[in-house]
Amino acid sequence: MKPLSIGGHLGAGGWDIAAVVVLSAVAGAVLCGLALAAYRQRGTRAYLLIALALVALFTRPLIALLSGFSVVSAPTHHLLEHALDTVFVVLVLGAVYYARTVEKRLDEEGL
Image (cartoon, rainbow, N blue to C red; front, side, top):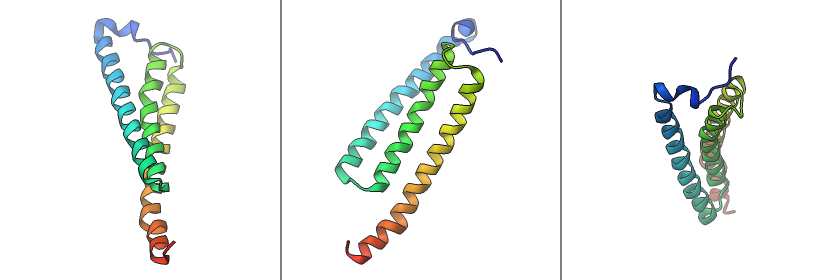
């Protein structure tokens, strides 16, 4: 497969795609910052897992930008984005499970 190139798509809205990816990266960075601040304040494992999930979400547009500038090949880009989707889902489910079972049990035991 041929690597993606933002420059090769300029006539077909390549800058629009790049702008959306950059906006996504900025929004992801803001969310990561907020999640890390919440984790720092609360300090629970569930908050840590959510912060890490948002880091995985933030990494996706960075991979897209690297692919757009031909630093990462298209197959690698595709694989990494699906892997990051999986990491995101596992971390969110882990956070929910931990918050609903482990933390609840610890509260009931008075720890």
